[in-house]
Image (tube, rainbow, N blue to C red; front, top):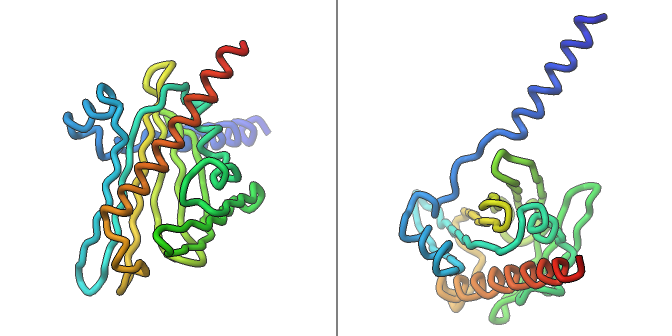
Length: 207
């Protein structure tokens, strides 16, 4: 019996350790000029590009920034998916089911509407949190990516997103260029950061 109990204990410990495993650094941390832009200049970086290879088109998206609030507070706000339609431009509707961990998003840009359901999965890492997402129905089925939230000391949080979608033809009107997507992404990321920092400042004043 003692051996069984010890086996269960070590199995659980191994599972916890794997969930807390270190993740690869976000793309921007390997580039000193981007580190400076985010940490010193407080820029919100958004990069969107399309590529063609072996008969497929790829849509690549990256974003990153720093939020002046602690990691756990930021994670709670970032994963409050039901609030997205209230907070963020271009999001018409957002509904999250915490049981199935499915997120429905309806967004619009320049007359183009995209409705999609995403499977969400969050785990704790040694630095903070990592949330995986995959579009499983609607527009952009097969799009995959992740959001990384890393503690930057006790007071700040570094957050970044990387996503990719591949198809024979991208389901986006030609009028919506990479520049338009970057502009929209920057507005959304900036609004999210401002909302979280304002909420944190109010909470600090009330304590």
